[in-house]
Image 1 (tube, rainbow, N blue to C red):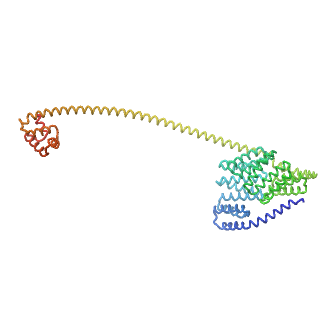
Image 2 (spheres, one colour):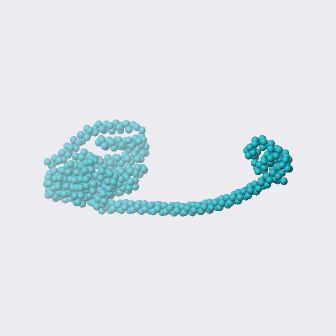
Length: 532
């Protein structure tokens, strides 16, 4: 019975492997066909991008073809396409991490960063920094992980990438979890969740709630831990992805273990195993197997406990996961203590302490604190710069407003002066107009006086005509009437109308008048009558 559980897991591995192979073989043919078509096409940036996309597709289909990403790297290097080189190395780093080859993962990510420095793709650089932080954390290199997460956070805030900000905040929180600084971890996890809630990213919330639950678990606040774990599990079931649900069962298993319900703990751990095996999640699988062994120690099932602990420890050693190695040696210490093998218990305890000290040490904490202070200082400097800039803008606005007020005042003054001058001119024009009207009135009065004099003169002329017309010039009555009308300024047409005679008759009368008066025109005729 000792290895019965392990045997079942191995059978599951074999079955799953053969099944996935038969399912993915057909899919891989499509990947290979597309790859061959791309391989013979022209080497350019479009080809490199398509190759990287094809490699991602091969991962999604479960038919990973590493030749595709290697070709993408080769093409990018040949045409000096730095973005392509960076993305290829970054993707290779992620693949190496999934293969639990963390050393190679670090190397690839660091190469990618070198090329991202020459690229304008800030978002991809941030993703690479976060991925590198994850890999360093898997290696329990907390100092390095912390530095890269903070660098990613800083850049993410500059370009306001909410998703990247949340990832970096959760990464920093996990570093503090590993160094057992739970209050600091909680602070960053909650910041991350707030970002995800505002962005309505349920997958991000799922991850954040699980992290917060872990903090409360380590703080022995089990009710709070249970609340956040179940909240995270509900979201994982709503949005299933890879080993997401399995990880939540793993956490619930740990919760029940801490509460002393070892049977319920084992049940949850066993629920996690199929998904962890399917997705080759060795880190969580190592943790799950070891903790099942711990539960079996408490239920005094020692034979199966040793097998599970040793398998979990061996997996942890293979992937170099210090936290799981430490957990494995702690479990062995407990096992050997319970089975009265104190020598081996002491050896296991020493090894567990060694790995614990390598994770949580003073120099790492000091470095992390230094990085955090540097970051907080930088944030304050940025805030001060922002305030200074805002103050400068306000000062500039005040100067602009002062200038506007000054020129506005000048304009208003000119407007008032123009208005006053216009009123002055208007009044002056009114006065001149009045004077003109007075002058015209005087002229009119003079004209009336002249007309009166003329009428008086005409009356005199009429009297003279009446007195001399017959005596002196032998003018007929009709000729006298015509002459009188002439002296009054009437034209031939007017005389014709007034006397009811034709124009020719008028002309005949005038001709006779000129002859009898011995004159040639009207003026001479009038002078003659006036005695001039």
